Amino acid sequence: MVQTDGLVPITRSFLSSYYDKYKFPTLSDDVSRLSDQIRAMSADLLHDSPATQGESLLVQEADRQPPHKIDENMWRNREQIEEILYLLEVSQWPRVLQQQSTLEDAELPSVLGRLQGKFESTLKTLEYYQAQNSEHIFNTVMTYMPQDFRGYSNQATERAL
Image 1 (cartoon, one colour):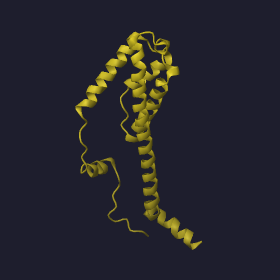
Image 2 (cartoon, rainbow, N blue to C red):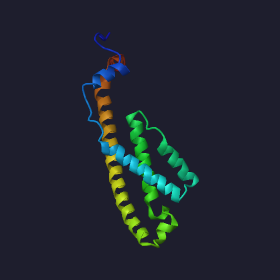
Image 3 (cartoon, rainbow, N blue to C red):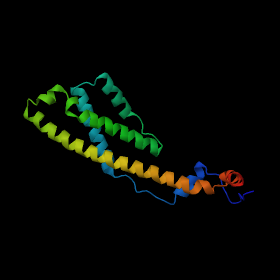
Image 4 (cartoon, helix red, strand yellow):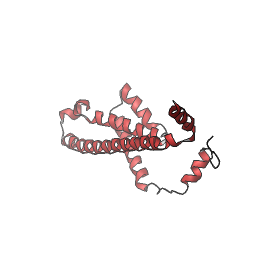
């Protein structure tokens, strides 16, 4: 029989006390300022051009509280970035923007193009992070799981066969 002395259950309080040693820097004040600016711009756009049914669902989703789990949060961010990139495609623009009738309308496509480039870069970074994180988790599981005491009896049985 394998010794289990010294093993403790991994609970939320155990993990909390473990991670208390690793402090994260607080978010910059720019995050809330920029978020407020984005919300104001979004409200202005919705006031000038009401959302369609599909866009309304997106607006409702954006107004929800963020998920508490980091992995869910990452996937939700990725989903929203992909949706934003889809909406930034020229074919998805309102007809007024596609026609570019005024000087202001002519400037907007260049701004949207720069935004699209930034979102594409952010998406690539997020995809890279998720791929690296998945690989790290897989390697950790493969490294430690065979040595885990729960797998001990199975390994002994396989060796005996």
